[in-house]
Image (tube, rainbow, N blue to C red):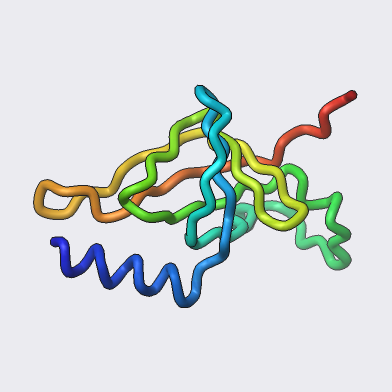
Length: 113
């Protein structure tokens, strides 16, 4: 368990993205190395040829992050210019301990200041 978890976190450190998690409760910001990738639309959706950044606003993102840093629905995530908010989140267990954490996120609606 612990060995596999350590190997996973090694991979995240080597190949992951440096993202900032922002706690919904405390507003605390923590930088973590995690995997973040867009979830492709269902095949029924017509293929969009040119995809300006605005066109992916409805897209969801999959987060796979370190066991030691909890992510909860409502927590926010910052990566470069991306502003995401977690919709659902879960811990993935292996032999009774948390192996990694997984979350589905959506882009934040542009805040009307």
